[in-house]
Length: 91
Length: 142
Image 1 (tube, each protein chain N blue to C red):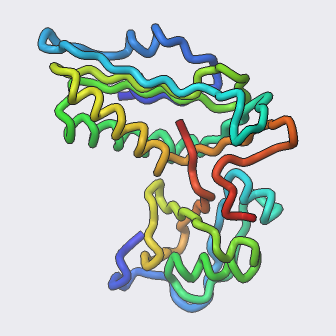
Image 2 (cartoon, rainbow over the protein chains, first blue to last red; image 1 turned 180 degrees about the vertical axis):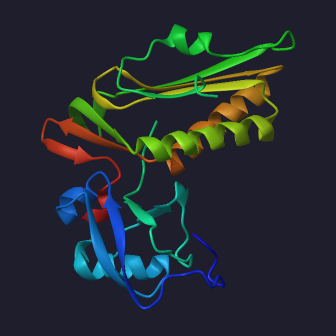
Image 3 (cartoon, each protein chain N blue to C red; image 1 turned 135 degrees about the vertical axis):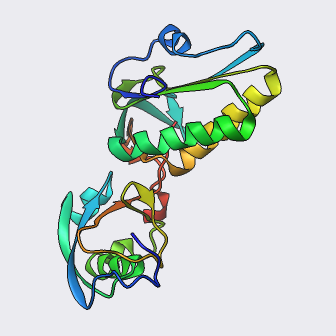
């Protein structure tokens, strides 16, 4: 995970591993999958997810990369595992 | 650090959590928050609660949150134990215990910690209600 001005990023269309948690698994029907992403930002990954699962389009999803919350404009690098969470509610 | 942040599928013993707390001679306050499974939510009777945690991320997030809270509030120690798996009504979900010289720091730190835990730690609850299953916080799906 690097800032957008990094030169070390994936280019064009790449395959990214995405993992779903809690009831997102019910909506997508899978725990994890590889998605072909157009672009290299977290937002591009989300756009692909929204396109594939329209029910999630307005979802307040949280994205975690390398165990840290990732902003929408962060760069996704080759080999990153993208964890996608619905709103959390511990305690 | 490992014995200060614990995620477990086992029943939580309050005395065990307290025993993990470190206190110096200057400590004059210990504050504890206990979260339990409620039997009624939104007017619906609850029979069971299933808690899912993304364990690796939750552990790291809680460890960082603990360290930040200790530094920010000047408390002596903080221990948190969170349960996952299947729980029954009345069971303990989470225990947070804080030690400090005076009570205000402990109260404030404890409130901050549980608020942040609810905001950023990857934990989800599936309630088995009298009228079916319900994921807590999934209202946006409607």
